[in-house]
Amino acid sequence: MKKFAKILFLAVLAVSFLQSCTTDYEQADKAVLVTVQKSLNAAGFYGVLDNGDRLYPSVMRVNYTPTNDLQRAIIYFSDVEGEPLEGYKYNADVFNVAEVTTKRITQVMTPEADTLTNGLKITNAWIGGGFLNVEFQVNVDPYLSKSLTVALQDMMIDGPATPDGDYYPLELGFKCYPALEDGVGTTITTMACFYLGGEYSLDNLGCAGYKISYKGLDSFSDEPNETKIVTPETKQ
Image (cartoon, rainbow, N blue to C red; front, side):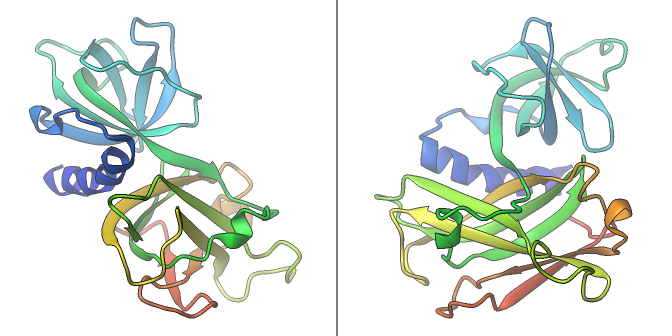
C-alpha cells in the first residue's frame, strides 16, 4: 500500500500543480485508485477499487461531485472506526478526491489530437478496473502551463486487419498548453486512464497485451521512438 500510495501521490502532483489544489494529503493514511460510481448516499458516490472492493465515503472533508460513472479518481482517506457498511470493504474518512484524466481510446484523431507531439516518458502502465492506466512524465512550465492534453490512438483503424504480433498497437500523444520545446521546463509525473470496455479487452482482441508507442521525453524526432508493452501480468 505504501508503494502504491507513493505512486498515486506523485501522479496527483500534476493535478494539484495545474489546479492549485491545497488539500493536505498527508492527513490521510491511505490512497487508492478507484472508479467512481454515482449513488444516492449523502456523498453522492462511492468508489470501486480495481480488485472489486468498494469504498464508502462516510465522512467528507472536501466538496466533490462525481461527473460520471466511468470517472477514475484517487481517494485519500483514513479508516473510520467500526465495521464498514454491508457490501463495502472500507468505511472512509475522505480528505480529498483527485480526479484522474479518464478517456476512451481514440479511433478517429481530431485536428487537436494530431498536434499532440510533445515528448513524454511512460514510467508505469497496467491493466486494472477495466482501464489501461498509464503513469507518465512530461515537461511543463511551472509559471505558464495551464493544461495537459493526452490521447491514446488505436493504430489499427484504417490499418492492417490484424495486429503485427501478439500486441495490439496504440499510440500515446501529449501536449502542454502553452506548448514547450522538448527537453525544457520542469518534469512532473501525471496519469491518465483509458476505458477498455468489451471492445478493447484483450479477450475480445485476441492479443496478449498492448504495445504503446510514444515520442520520448528527450527526443526531438517527429516519429514515436519508444514503446511500452503492457500485459495482464505487468506489475506496478
